[in-house]
Length: 106
Image (tube, rainbow, N blue to C red; front, side, top):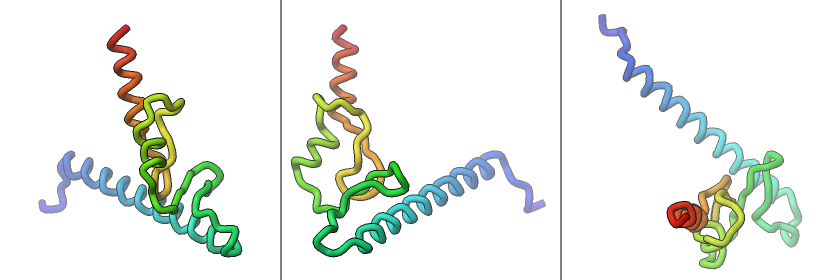
């Protein structure tokens, strides 16, 4: 009786499982990036680079210039860029807006 699952419950559980897996992967990548930096001599640590062969990380203090470059750069070549702080990618909203404006105007 009480053990019957409704379709919404199954979907919600799958969604939670995917979120938990994503969090676990991001935590693992963050730990790997920190370990990578800590293995370097202190004067060689840059606190930014790539982990797992292709995932960018940047643990330097964020700056306005870096924020503009990665989050609001309408003239930038890429829609996806490395996070301003942390592991992974972010959307260059400035580029997306520029592409939409160009598409609407033509």
